[in-house]
Amino acid sequence: EFLPTNHYSVEKVCFSAGPAGLLDTLQELQRKTVLISGSETHVCVFQTTRDLLEAGYTVHVIRDAVCSRFKENYLSGLQLMDKMGAVINNTETIAFDLLRGSDHPAFKVISAAVK
Image (cartoon, rainbow, N blue to C red; front, side, top):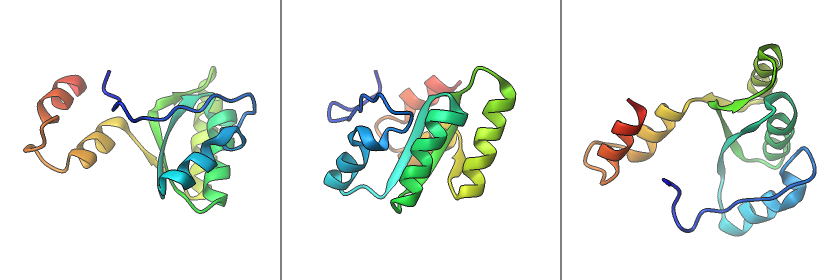
């Protein structure tokens, strides 16, 4: 419900979202930074992050918005992506960084959502 009307989704059949058109979409939108969330931290998220980093993007992996079936796989996936150069971040830090200040129109909504 918080996504803007102009958000983009990429459907995929490969483990990485790169071949599914994500890289083309990002290039078209002229984006340089990507926030990653998703399932199977050590497989899909890892491979997508690797492809984005190799393509020159700054990648923030949102640690509380990714998951794996087993904690060990989750932790090893985060560690691998950190070593590759991804920024391991969290939802609250990203949300408030995007707002920049309490004068943002969405501040009260976001503040209530993270409590």
